[in-house]
Image (cartoon, rainbow, N blue to C red; front, side):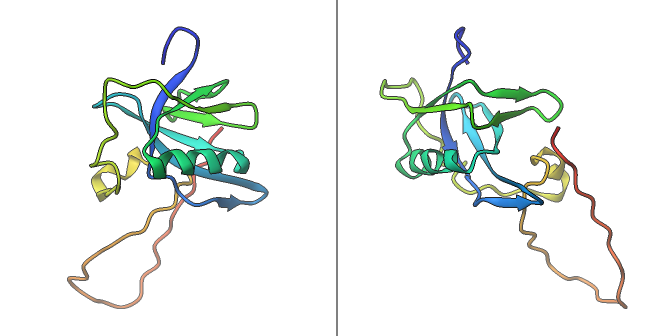
Length: 140
């Protein structure tokens, strides 16, 4: 982020649009340097299109008028956020390792609230039916 409140980043791991009640959102990761990323959640479905385009073309974007949620350490993109293609060259390339995001059970707390994940598991023992309770957190 520079002094003008602008964020220059590559977009990675953009999810499809999710619905939670009346709220539609999508999540992604923004690569801000060769080694740094920040999670982002977008509450404006029309902003998903430029994010997807930037991810597919591996082109950087410039974000303005975004918010930062300190509690969840997440960039919040809403209807007032401006997303522009960034045409200048950056001193880093888009990360190839961020193209597919693998999360372990130990790092599950690093995921954005309400982000959907697929779980891949190996069954090592099978017993009778059990109930497992899950909780949803809401981003405020």
